[in-house]
Image 1 (cartoon, rainbow, N blue to C red):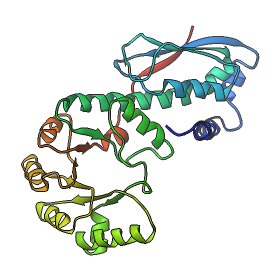
Image 2: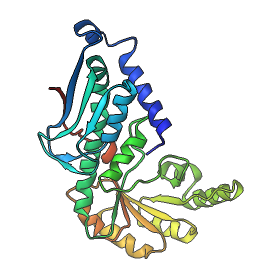
Image 3: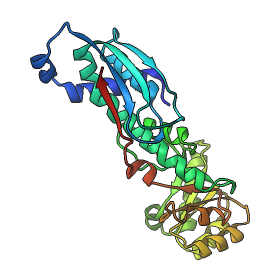
Image 4: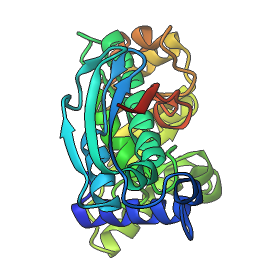
Length: 281
């Protein structure tokens, strides 16, 4: 996860977005100077992620709030479990409530989905990885949730790995040109970055291998038989990654083709948040 200052800035921006010039519901109905308690409850089964972020949300909202945590990231939670309690000024608890829930519910949903994919490929040696299909501003939290669920992070952004996708290849005039131009660019700028190339058919796999000097070949929207054939063709000359059209129902079959990685965009961009609730007591 990012460092404390970046997390702090994220929470501050999110609070400003939500609170604006004041929590007028709480100011009107409750007012300042009233103290109470609340507890975070699990309402469905899943994998918890973001509990320490929740504590940070409460602290940044009001440093006088007292938070006690009773669960840790990565554990399986069940309905009725108390995950944390918070006590202090009621206005502060209510101000932090929705932001805290939005973060922990989403992170836990991602961790839960990731854990299910990881379970399906157990024993194959294939790693489940995420993509850049993330919520703007929340990527560092969503990728943390993938790790909590047992997955592996792909690149964090455009800056830490080269991925030559279909549009790069088409604009560059083909795979060979795209790879050669990229290698020249990296050498000229003294950049040590891995190169991944997206391929759409076996012809493009052959071409990528002929050029050489790359680290990973992505097999995009390949069928299971074509994936197995591509893996045999690549023969460990580069890492291999399957992507596109992969679901819980077929992920095991793709993994059994021998690919090193399977990227699942839906882990972060098409996810169901885990149901949690903050209740006064």
